[in-house]
Length: 379
Image (cartoon, rainbow, N blue to C red; front, side):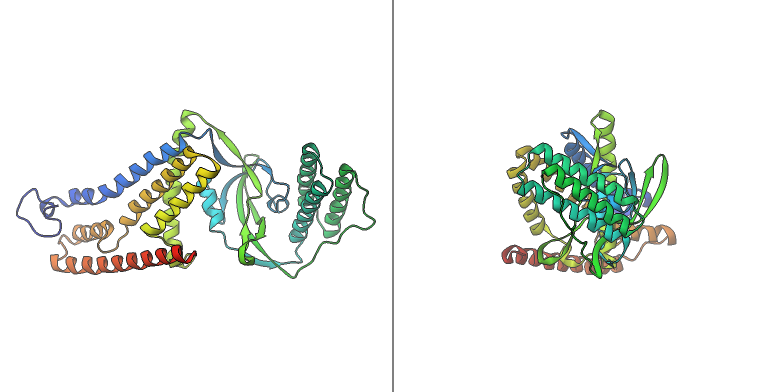
């Protein structure tokens, strides 16, 4: 663009335009990225038969959150002080939740162990007795009912009594005798848990639930993994819900991108969590391949469009960061010119942008090498 990087005597050149016009030109690219992101989001939302809300429907047969405060019908509005307005917010809040070491002697941990052991026992009965689907469903309901009672228990003795009662009920439904001695609940000094405070709307009132645990299982390399232990109420598809989901989820993705950048600065994420074009292409290939195997061509295309949408919004936000060589850096220069009524000297601006560009290119090269190494090393 004439007059953008050098002075020009042309009255219509960029450097001779009024400052507010130059500001609009600078932010136009980011705005177009966001608008394109909205269009791509609409394309991903439109084919869905329904969308996910943030309201708890029912709990899984093995649920920690059910015995530590959450109830069916709760509308989740905040997790770990992160506002939850859409299912995208909900997923990001869970993804960024840290795992903590907790006292294994806590009553809440004991309740969780009772619920988990009942689920394991029910699974063993189904497998050993070769129970039909109806019996399987009844045992699952018993697990859910036990969780409700365990959530109200005020002591370990009361919790263990509930455990034994439902243990016997499960045996009776499976056609086996009650054990002569019920199994003890294993004790360990410390446990790893995904624990946080959750704000919900319950019976029309906002309520804060402290120390809610989410199902924590051991994954690869014995590392803890968070598992969703409840199901979410769906939102019926209407024209209004599609539009609302489109704009709401776009805002949520923008918040997710910004939150990720803040997390990177705070050390919550590392450089290894970043990906460049090579890593993105590899991720798209993996996602598309998995969707083709499990859900078909349409789902694969939708997943690819969703990734494109995230990348587009990410570019729009990243490009407006006040860093040299980015549009955000140029906007900052214009802001300085507007405040002091005098432009930054062209040579100074050129040096600043050159240094910024070199740093960005170096970071890009490093990430590209890292992504290639990850592909060939299988990391």
